[in-house]
Each structure stands twice: as C-alpha cells, then as structure tokens.
Length: 503
Image (tube, rainbow, N blue to C red; front, side, top):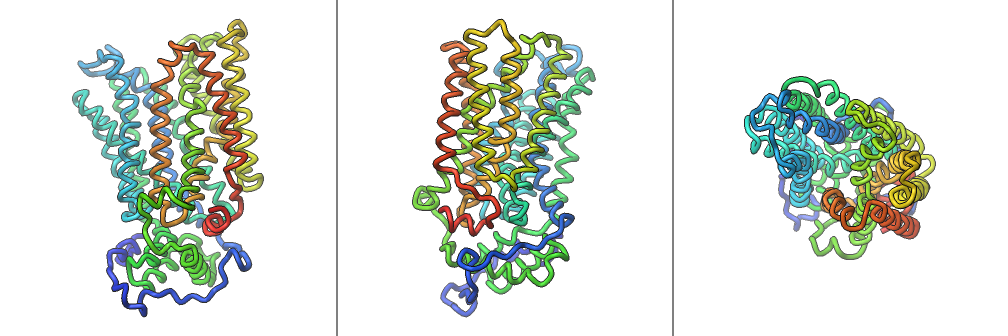
C-alpha cells in the first residue's frame, strides 16, 4: 500500500556523488551467474495481486477492441444511435475505430521520455486515469469531435499500460512463474475482447447502446487505479535508482526490501535482504550506473536487445495479424454464416478460441520454453497463410479450406506471437534501458499494426487477396529464420541472468 514512506517518493532525494560514503555499493557477494542460483521463495496468493491489477490494463485494451466492433454499428444506426450526427463518412467511422490506436502511439512516444522517471507503478496509475477519462469523455460525448478526443485519451491509456504492465509484472514476478504471468496478460487481453464482444452483442439493440459499451470501461479503470495505488513499487526499479545515484542508497535498499516482502508474502522469510543484495551486486557488475542515452540504445547490448525485442514485435504484426482478423467475417460469410447474428456469434467463437489457446500457452510456456512455442506456432501461421493464399487464388470453391486456415492461424498465433512476443520484450532489455526499450517496441507494435491494417485494402486491390496472403506467408517464413538464429531461450532465468548471458 502506498504510504508516507512510498519508495517512489524517495527518488526525488538528491545526493552528492562525491560523497562515497553514502553512494558507494559495498556488497561483497558472488554474482548469481558466477555462483549458485538461489530459488525465489514465494506464495501463489501473494503473486496474484501484483499480476492482476497491471493485467487490468490489458483487459481494458482487449475490451476496447471487442466493444468498438459493435459500438460503430450502434453509432451509425438512425434508430438506435440516439444522436443526430449518426450519418458518418467512412473516414469518420475509421477515426472512431482507430482513434485509440493513434492515442496508443502517442502514449508510447510519451513513455519513452517519462517512464523511467515515473516508475512502473505510477505509470500504470496514470494509465488508469487516462482509461477512466477516455471512457467517460467517449460515453458522454455530445458531438463527434468530443467522441474522437475521448478515443484518443483512451488510447493514451492503452499505450502507457501496454508499456508499463509487462515491465511491472516481469520485475516483480518470481522467475519460476514469470513466463506464465506475463503470458496471462495476453490472456487478459483476449478475455477483454470476449467481454467486449459479449457486452456489444447484448447492447447492440439498445438506444444509445454505444455510450454504455464505452462507459463500462470506467469502473474497470477505477479498480485498476486503486489496485496499483495499493501495490508496492518494483524493487528492481528502486534499486536501479539507487545504483544511478537518484536517492540515498541505504534508504532505497530498505524500501526495496520492504516492497519485495510485500510482493512475496510470508514465504520469503529472511531471504529478502539477500535477494536485494544479489540484485544490487548484479546491477553494479552489469554497468547499470548511468542512464542510457538515445545513442546508446543503438549500440552494444542495447542494440542487441532492441533487435530481439523490436524485431519479434515487428514480425508479430507484419505476418498479417490485423488483416487476417479483418478478413474473418468475410471468410465465415463465404462458408455460409451470412446473417448479422451469425457474424456476431462467429466473433465470439474466435475470441473463445483465442482464449483457449492462450490458456494453453500460459500453462506450458515455463515448461517447454519460449523458442519451441515460437517455432512451432509460427510454422503453423506460415502454413495457414499459404492455405489462405491458395483459397483466394485457386481454391475458391472450397470454403472449408479458408475456415480451417483461419482457425489454424488464430490458434497458432495465440500459442506463439501473441503471448511470447510481449513476454520476450519484457525480459530481454537491460534494466537501465528497459523503460525506453519497451517504449520503442510498443511504438513499433502499434505503428506496424496501423500500417498493416491500412495498407491491406490498397494492396488487395492492386495485387489480389491471394497474392497478399502469399506475401504474408513468405514473411512468416522469414520470421522463422529470425526466431531460430536470433531469439534466445530465457526460461527459468532471472532478468539479471538473461542480461549477462545473452547481451
């Protein structure tokens, strides 16, 4: 719980770097990589809340995707919109749909500058505030312009949440279950989509139903904000501030121990101070003392981490994920599900499939590892894209091929790129550049998503849908090569061990 001794409040204290007595780290302890790895003691109960409230950021992101598909239909209805400006152009409707995406790009760019100053916990609190404001402004929008502003505000919350939540979970989770917890965040995104589709289908015939669809986000944002206010700060972020001379070392160390005890519960026993000292020792040996400049992000191990993280996220998007889902309705229509009610049920079915396959990934990620899931899942994605290309090129009279390919794509994506992409970017960056590194990769994620979504229709008109899917299939094969030669296996390693071993 945030108190007068909130560790994030101590960061503003200044120290004289010339006074070695207060700023020098005198920890004579064998580093984890050169000594014996100590298992982290924790209880499942204490691990739940530090995951749950950050994961609400993903839930609210997924909910927006699901709810917006029904909200745009409601807004454009002459009888059910409850507004006089329902007759919108395709561009205006597109701004409603993609407004949160533009806001997320803004939020990611802002995070690059302020994330390390704010800290993970406070960034998530700010994210919850933007979610809340965006939901209210959108729900009560009297005119179209206010509606778009609300969508942008909500999107800023998405950008900040998708940046800070993986970091907070990665830095606070026990290494034994870190993969499961970060993958569960993807589960929450998909669960949010399912909730959004369900709420939308229930309110689609309600007058001004779109206002209620967007308004549902507000109380969820309040829960997220209160939860993050109650949770402690990331001990690793506090220790990074100590290493970088942003506060009195002993005081920050004690606060890190206190936060770690809150995060692990009674199971941690007397080992909290040892774990904190181990982390401090590793950080000092890994040269984390200085803040990274933009130039340093493009050099040495920072560049290697950026190549791994941004490259994986880029392939996640340019293998056609936005476009395949965009084509889902048409594929089901070709298979005979043509009524509006059928389309809604198909969307809910796809969300359920995504949820089930994400749950499978959560269960096995810390047993099988990251690389096997990526290699196996992306191989299935490549096959499904070639099947889709074949359907739209010369198998148009066999809609079962398209439906099978669509289900294969969705299932394999949720086993691989979906959860593992976010997991890898939260693990791979060195602590002192983790804030900026993740902001760049989140920016790449939303930017590539927008590019693929907006370029698909022109490419389809120019080349044909079959050719475009074949191109996506070729990119998926390239991504397999990238994964095989570039992506490391991080299963079971602490964040400090990952940095020392692979960067």
